[in-house]
Image 1: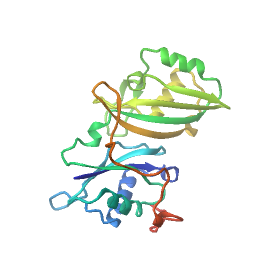
Image 2: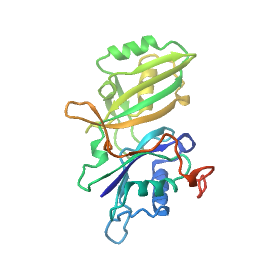
Image 3: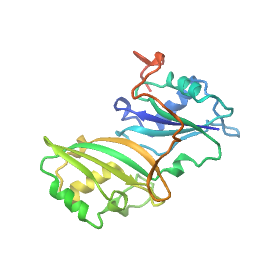
Length: 253
């Protein structure tokens, strides 16, 4: 059986790395005494994973944790135990239980929804219209040292459309970014394309980027939630009693 959770990464911990975030979750799972399964061998490790890594500096209300259990347990008991042991900045939004044979969440992701707020020194309408009309928007995607050669990527293949509003020198963008076997693109990469190639006067260093959702695709390409509809949904911002005031294990990661 698998426990699957939609959790947050909030502004107070936005600059911790993906590895630090994983270690934080592992500590919370141990403190909560969740009956988690471990791998076999000389160095057994906890069997859990996140559906998609998040860039440092980006907040999220749509991190999806998949945790293999060594024995069944009621969903509410698992959620309550883990909620009381998560540090500030991580909360459970939704949860469900699935069979071990259910497809991995990582393999089910078809797209990501982002919300971006970024200072913009001039009216972006013309540049955004040119992006919408463009058949392609090619850019060079670079990787970290030792992670492969740069390659040419078409931003329009991943982000065909962008919803935008502009008020008081602040540009707000919301868009879906497709995920495929060829990969995906980061929200920050789209902002750079809009700035460099379509003339938007963006202050890239002050961009506030939030992941709103990860979703699967139905047979006709329609969006579908990653977790089951009959799962458990927690009230927005709800805390268990031991989380009120401060986390019993401190706010540090």
